[in-house]
Image 1: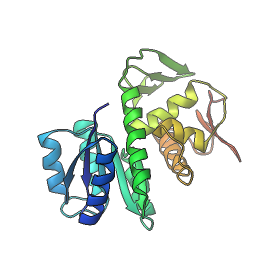
Image 2: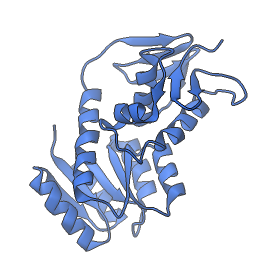
Image 3: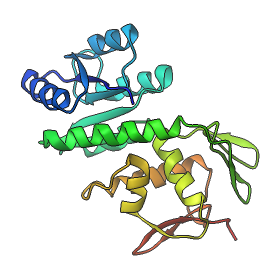
Image 4: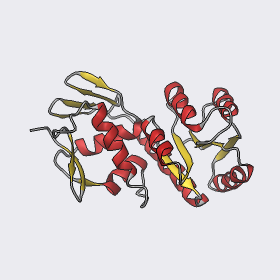
Length: 229
């Protein structure tokens, strides 16, 4: 596993604290204090993961996430204030792998970084199996999804959630179980982010909200993938 983390925040104290904890955990830390500097760091050498504050000078964390995902498929954890619920959901929608709310525990940040990197490492391993549920096809080796032959563009997190459920059609997964599949760990208090990912999945799969599609809700329990009846 690569140990190269880019920390981007305009608060020097936060950068100092995160750097200390990440280095203590064995990571190499690079820092930037604004959007353009972060882009320059990534252009110089792509890190294993980027830890981005949403509110950054120059280019904000949401836009950086778009660019890093598009150009480098770079895992991203967004750091947000508790009042920025909309920004968090937008960040997850455009491809952020996880988010952390301020104020946060530095130890939790380290755990999240390790979890996202473990998941990224597993995803890069060889696995050529193709999973099919009705007309839904998931190519694990290529990390590609299609419905009735039409390609569906998913974020890394959306892909992992969909694959987890599709491997066992009809099995019901709780939000915490899907969160663990998506991040490598189950962090209580963050499981509601799964609802945002499920909403995005249904939209991208072209499902009619008035009819049961491949991704189905089991009220009071969680979600499952099943061929529509």
